Length: 162
Image (cartoon, rainbow, N blue to C red; front, side, top):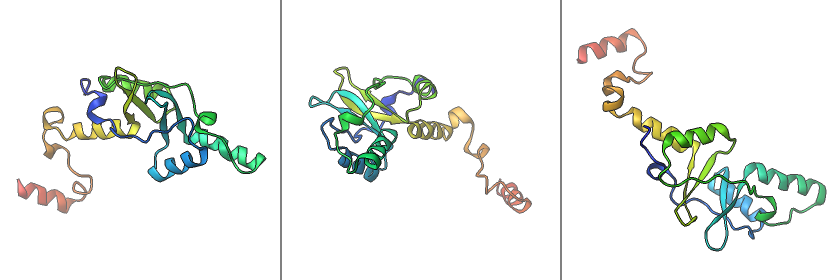
């Protein structure tokens, strides 16, 4: 598990936003793609911030007090970003998620361009895929489905089948 890198399980074509995108349009994009946050990149594709659902809540507050929300992504995004390289190992990524509240980490190439992103779910799915590897976790028979393992009748059927 330690040797797996971000390049193996990152989302390769993440939603990216421009700092000049209308904030309401950006909010619609997040909702449509069902993603809790997206990297914000400049014209050259370099990371300049992240726009999250939490940042978008500021839009709702502004609308409640000032009327129709206006502004650009750059007005609401978080500028404090933490990107990783495609070669970052899974243990380091898990550590970053534990130390921070964000749900996704952008993945940058050597030139600082976004090439993907890793989510908490991506990490959990990678771990689950590793569990199915008999070399690491024993044979598949040792990991019985919970439903399959319940009840005397099912236990008897399994015993007879062996």
